[in-house]
Image 1 (cartoon, rainbow, N blue to C red):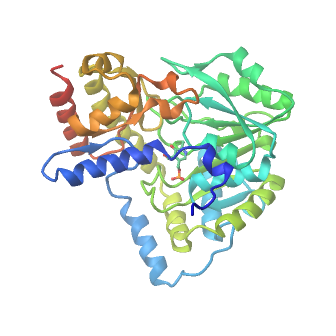
Image 2: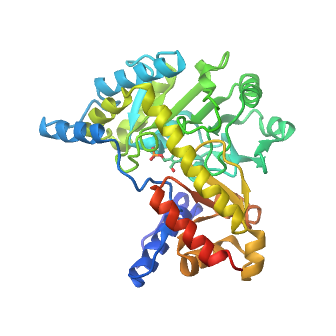
Length: 399
Ligand SMILES: Cc1ncc(COP(=O)(O)O)c(C=O)c1O
C-alpha cells in the first residue's frame, strides 16, 4: 500500500543542491583514492570562530539545556539589537520586533506563513535561491518570477513594475544574492521600495550574506530606506557570517504586528532554536568590527583564487559582487564535452573532474533558462581551492 503524499509536497522536487552533494559523496565513497572537491552546497570547510565554539561548550556546561523563550533568549535578542545598531544605526526593539528561528530557512518559511494568504502573489527574482518557490507554495501563495539579466544581473524596471498588482502581497529580495553574487544598488532598492509603497506590499529581505560584499561595497538594508521600515521584514542568521551552517540559528526583524504573527507560526513550527547555541551566537554577534573586515578580506582572496581559474579553463564568468558564489556559463565546455544540459554536465564534472557544482537550471522556473549555467561556491580553505584549481585544470584545461 502506498501512503498518500500531499499535493503541496508533490509540487516541488527535492533540492538539487543537496542532491549534488549526495552524488559527490557517493562518487567519493566508490573511489576512496581519488581526489575531489565539493563546490556545490554553500558551507565552509574551515573552522568556526574558536571563542564562539567555546561559548557553546560553556553554555552546555552551564546546563542551558531546556527550551529557551520561543522567540529567542534575552541575550541573543540583545546582541542582535546591539549589532544592528552598531552596523546600521537603527536599534530594533528586542521585545516586539524580533524572532530568533532555526536558521534563515525557518525565518523565511515562518514569515511567509505568517504574512501571506493562499491566492496571494509573491514576487521572486530569478535566478533565485531554490527555497523561495517552495516557501511560497507551502504558504499557499503563487510565486511571480522577475528575471535578473546577466552579465550584471540587472532587472528590467518595466517587467518588475508589471509584476505588481492587487494580489501582490510580498516581494522577496536576497541581497547580496545567491546564486548570482549580485548586490542590489541603492537606486534599484529605491525603485523596488517605491513599488512596494504604491501597491502596499511587504519586502521580505534575506540578508544572510550581509557581511560578504566585495570591492568596497557597503550593505544597504531595505528597512533603512525611507518609508520602508514599517513594511520590511529583515532576515539574517549566523550560518554564513560565523561559518556555522549546522547550528541552525537565524532571526527575523519586523514591525511589531508582523512579529506577533511570525512568532506564533515559529512557535508551532519549531518552538525555538537550540538554547546553548543561541548563547554562543550572542557571543559572536558582539565581535568587534575587525572580525567583519577580516571576513571580507578572507572571502575576497577566495573569490580571487577561484574566479580566474574558472575563466582560464573555459567558463564564462559573471563577476561576483557579494555572497560566496560564482555563476558561470558553460556553453563552450558543454559543447566540447558533448553535453546538452547543465545537469548532465554537472554530473560529468563530478564523475570525471571530481568537482561538485550546482546546475544552473535549479535556479530558474523555466529550466531551459539555466541550461548552460553552472554555479560554484568558494567558501573553502585555501588548500581546498588549490586542489579544486588543480582538478579543473587537469580535467578541463586541455580540452
Ligand atoms: C540566500 C540564502 N538564504 C538562506 C540560506 C540558508 O540559511 P540558514 O542556514 O540560515 O537556514 C542560504 C544557504 O545557502 C542562502 O543561500
